Image (cartoon, rainbow, N blue to C red; front, side):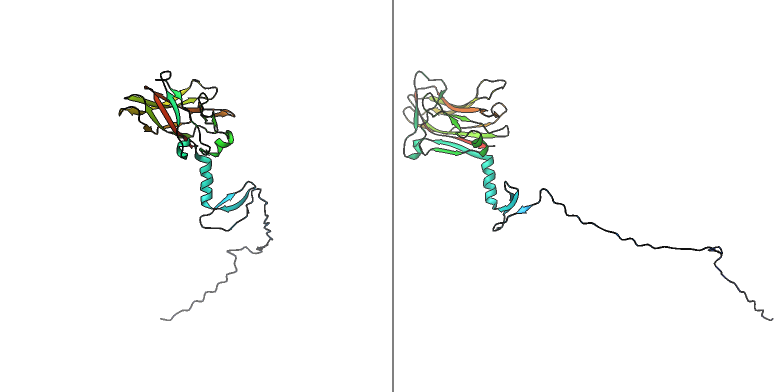
Length: 263
């Protein structure tokens, strides 16, 4: 059977995609982009003045806003000076002398009385937090003599503060089976309700081993600075004084008074 060869000719003129007479034009335009990098003069720009930098140094700003390196021990010491401290008054007992005596006789038995304290010339230690020193430089009123008791000021403290008070003393009773009580008597600042004084107290000695001998005690009284004894204004803050009460006659021998402050 003969084979017939069929020849197919086709022309693709693009008519399916573009109609005759259609023109296509693509324009690619590159525009110049400009980036402005502006340096701002910051009002709190850090200025430094480094010293000999050591391990564990801290970076702190001084009162002119300039940063410098400070030893960590110095940082901790400064923070401690701002937040805690103490105020101590020592009698001659701690300087090869004697304690200060307050006599309890028939006229003041069973009554809280102010103690007498002769502070040694080297016996004042003012390590109070800085805020207290700034608010009231002298710390106390009264010189500790009879009728002019030592009254400690809480000026410079707020309601976040608390304190421990410690007295060092001995009592020599004139008769057996006596009891000695100690207290801190607080005066409130102005404008409080109630406005009357208040106290915290404890039984410091039960003297059951005979008379005419020294019974040594170191009463420790703790308190927080509440909103009636905090700093209400300049010259207007709570105050406290140390007092004792004995139910027998005898002699109090006061060695020291100390207030430990946490601001």
